[in-house]
Image 1 (cartoon, rainbow, N blue to C red):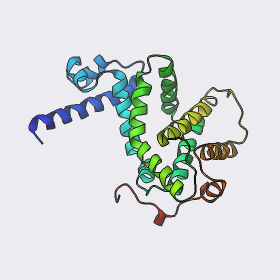
Image 2 (image 1 turned 90 degrees about the horizontal axis):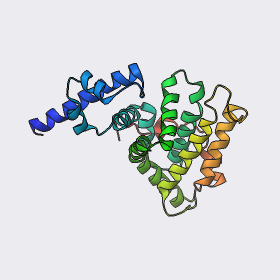
Image 3 (image 1 turned 90 degrees about the vertical axis):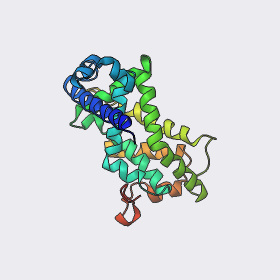
Image 4 (image 1 turned 45 degrees about the vertical axis):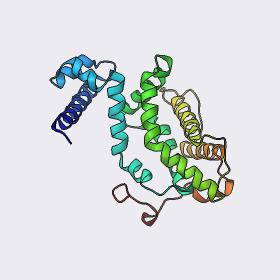
Length: 231
């Protein structure tokens, strides 16, 4: 690797570190690319050579946090299978549907930002969808393929990745109804609602009732999982 490339990579990391501090202190709306550039001790023009917008900076930070999440690393480190597919859906549902009760309000603010992006220019949503799709999509699609091959699922359409997005959208909207102090809808018991949503999604992406009954709610044993470090 050339010295120039090393310097460029280092500068990129310094910009991200400065952006994290700015976003943590001032939030997304209160942070400007000018303030991030000042915190990184570079010009705003140089910042734009690495990140074309504030949304791109924020999306990159969120993608890095996703990659560093140990639960997600565990999931993505497993062999694609029916069990992995079910666990992935359970993880997505649990993450979003429990945001309302999470002590970290930053997560709920991020979801609001994601939703409002769809009503604005869509830049932030497009960037984040791209990063999430590249991170999780291959494992999801490969697990769908394995489930079909094992007789645990039937094919649904020609684009397996669409099934991931349909599942994501259903969970995102369900979680959105729960964000206000007084929820827009009552789904009843939280645990029962999460399980029902998992069943709804798993049936929608083609899993058989037998496969759902076998894998939903099952705690995988250590021998069944492969960590990201050993993958």
